[in-house]
Length: 113
Length: 115
Image 1 (spheres, rainbow over the protein chains, first blue to last red):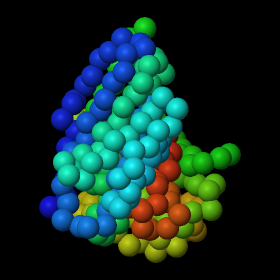
Image 2 (image 1 turned 180 degrees about the vertical axis):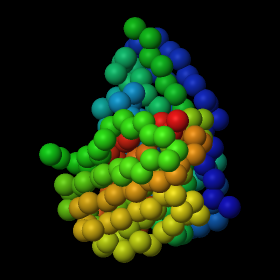
Image 3 (image 1 turned 30 degrees about the vertical axis):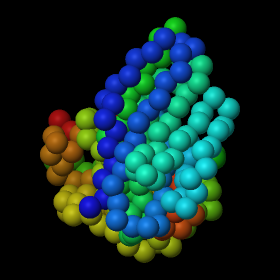
Image 4 (image 1 turned 180 degrees about the horizontal axis):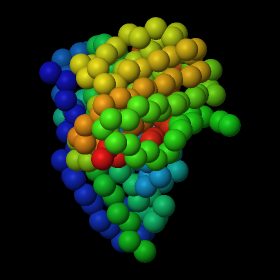
């Protein structure tokens, strides 16, 4: 069965610290896609990244970076030098063979000034 | 307007009321989605429309009735709801129904409270 686990329910750090959000997935598909979304207090989910299963290159976008490791079925997200505006709930998601998204429960990230 | 818009942003309704949620996407996408987000639960996919045809219906109670008159608009008609239906209802769109390969873009949601 397809499954996404975000074991960290809530993380609280002080501004400028680095923080890593964990995502572990389960799938029997050989072709799949992984996503990260951000949900700020306003409620709107914001797309951050999509990664397909054949591309294990790590991605960096400004202060954001993603580490995809098929060997451990993980797709972790790191924020470097965190800022208060990074406070949000972050969701990891996996596409299944029916092209539906399987969502993790989310990690609430609190950045304290 | 850009992106995905939803109205109303907040709605309080009694269990005997009938109301509708509206979603509009300005991205030229062909697929639209309704999700329910309850506290401490993963997002639940309710309905998927592709080119105005309903292609997914994930065992949603009949008190929720979707309508997609064209590829830019999506409605969720509500009637005789229960208090457990109180949640944030999110609309999303993607380039096509293969939402797993194409990223979905979300609206700000409608916070629904059923009294």
